[in-house]
Length: 125
Image (tube, rainbow, N blue to C red; front, side, top):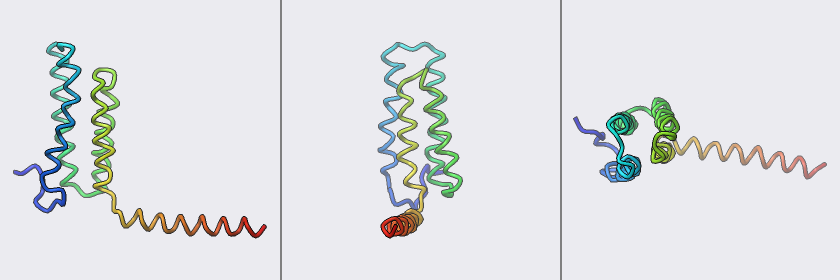
């Protein structure tokens, strides 16, 4: 079973982006971590990997939960491993892949019209 669907516009780039996951391993390596710390690091990496690749397969609405899980993983492990901030960065960078850009554009148009009407009303008074 492939980790990425064939119809993705990103091609093989999601595999390359995983190089940034290496920052999560700096602290355990440099601190000569014990077994418990390594088990937590490996478990967190596996959980992250499952969420990361699942985002490419799930519909956009379901992917929000996966992104929230990534952010929670990063926040929850921050006291343990400062490199966990990489999970939050992956969350933020993954958000653009699940958002329908037409909805954002429509939102900006509506927001601009509302703002313009409000400004015009303020200018008349």
